[in-house]
Structure formats: structure tokens, C-alpha cells
Amino acid sequence: MSPKVQRALVLGLIFAGVLLAAFFGLRAVFAFREFRRHGPPPLPHLEVLNEQAPETNVDLVRDWMTIPYIAKTYQIHPKVFFDALGISPRGNEEKSLAQLNEEFFPQSPELVIELVKAVIRANLPVLTADPPATPVPPATP
Image 1 (cartoon, rainbow, N blue to C red):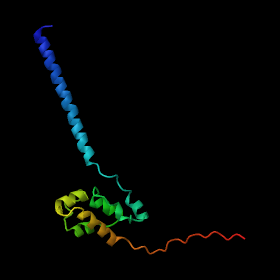
Image 2 (tube, rainbow, N blue to C red):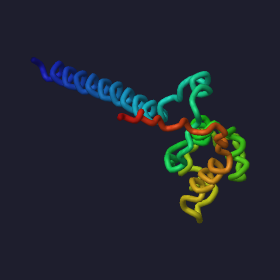
Image 3 (cartoon, helix red, strand yellow):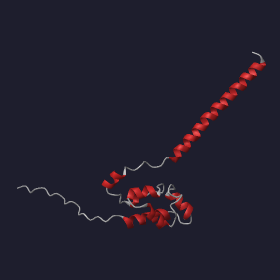
Image 4 (cartoon, helix red, strand yellow):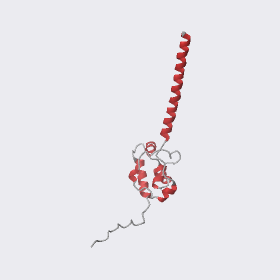
């Protein structure tokens, strides 16, 4: 093989390798970006939520949750949360509680989570039905 052909072959293989690396590298970057966009699993449909009682345990609130996610879980309108925090819902719906705390209250760690928990406690539905009576086994002679 002549040196010209050998050089052309080497350059062609290098070019093909660079193209393959760029192609798969871009695919990996787009896949990673898509992966980062995924949030918590979706909640059941509204009909199913209406049949179930809302969540009442405020200790389940975590800093990765968003206001709309918490609003659906606890069945409280998102505007109530945004009003209590004193921030606009526009542009902040997709931010987690940790991001909201970092952006609006950097001097007070965990303030947003505590305010959200307080709003949930204040807006929990009042249980009006008495709990079912505990069945008593019949007396045996």
C-alpha cells in the first residue's frame, strides 16, 4: 500500500471515529437532559382522588416536591401555598421547595418546607364522621 493511500485510510478512519463519537455523545447528552426533566410519578386521575381522602400526614413533605404536586396530594389549591409564601406562581410552578427556598429565602434554610407544612395543617379537612365502632365478639357461656 502506498503512503498516500495509507494516509487517506488513516484519516478516513479517524474522521469516521470522530463522527461516531460525536453522534453517540450527543445522544447521551439529550438522553441525560430528558432524564433530568422527569419528576415524581403522576398522581391518579382526579376522579380517583375525589374518591380517596386527601393525605393528612405533613411529615411526608420533602424538599424535592413542587407546589402543584403537594397541592394535588393534599387537595389544597396551589394559590393558597403561593400566597402564604408571598411569591408569584408564574415561573415557580416547576421549582422544587428547595429551589424556592434557595431563591426567595436563602437566609432561612427549611423555611419554605415549614411554611408549606403550616399551610397544610391549617387547611386540612375536618373529619365529621365518627370512626367505626370496634366490633365486640359475642360472649361465650
